[in-house]
Length: 98
Image (cartoon, rainbow, N blue to C red; front, side):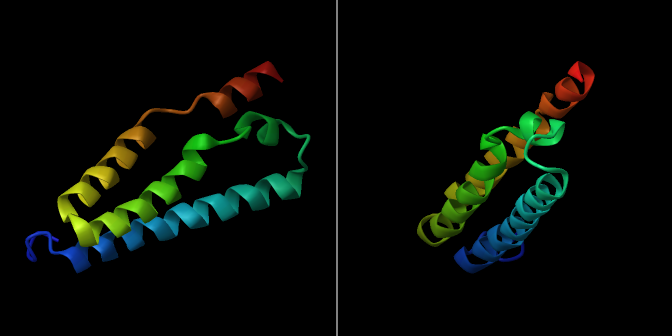
């Protein structure tokens, strides 16, 4: 993106490259929960998983924003990264409670 001075297409492709692992994470999470059953500790700890479901949607919004204003798209990508830097204690708390 830097060599292209944050042009729309490179920023959108970057967002797409961020979206793919987010989708893969969601699929992996659902497969693990399905394999262990919905009543297991992991399924209960994950609950609604707002952060995991909202991240791909925000990345999609960032891809769309890339064509309107690439800097806003980069701001969305940065915001998502900062949100994921905050540890999620749900799983650890559920394991300790069990």
